Image 1 (tube, helix red, strand yellow):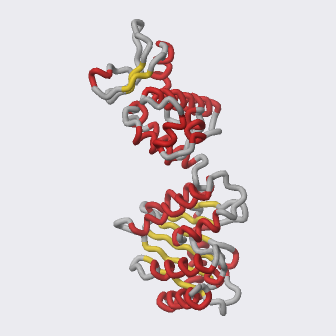
Image 2: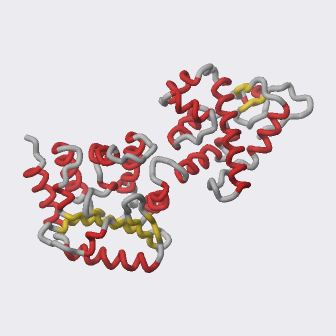
Length: 338
């Protein structure tokens, strides 16, 4: 951490042994010039209490979070200069971000988890931030307080990653877990309220799908209304590719995709989409979509009702093989462009 005796020369060093250590002892330190003894001690004291809280929980936590932002702002600016990047444009080019992104980070705005990881990779010398976990906690805080997913979806996305079993019912769209990029982009581009770019949100959605290829992937059950297959999202080519991908994914041994045919008129699933996750600890979470926001809950009554409706929906659906045949039939007959 940061330390400064009364005889301090007015410079701080970030090296593999910590802020304030002599770079000659490590051989890889970077010099942060023109830092006063008062700043040294302030950095030391602040870094020792740098764990961010949830914004708005109390005045003390809010003040602590603001102080942590200031710490990051100063250290990131100093690290850039000490590494020889005299302008934010230079660093932005190296990290692969726009200059405005670097400017906001150095100004104290919590950046995206992607930028946090880029800083950690480019400046391993920032061990006071990296080894003590500040950058990682910083990225997690961003995810919980304004990352690429809406706040109401964070607890669901976290549970989805480690679930042992997943169920999705969708009467309108292909579930995000099974969307191809072009399909996802078409949907995300239609959202007028998101502050995140389509690129960032699409990347986040595709990242969620990695759970299907993990060593111990969950058992996944998906039930769709046939109308989903006929709704044009992104154009004929996108729909064709999406349905082919859906049919291919449905052949995986741990994924079951079923379709409720259009001949089934009214049923309980028409009230909206729902997802159910069985967690590693034996619990269950339910996520329900809404017009402006969704909600995730483990409330026993909601869980019980959701499970009951899932069972009923499966009973209306075609068997697995017949469902995949229908998906491919629609892909070829309705969406083929050849």
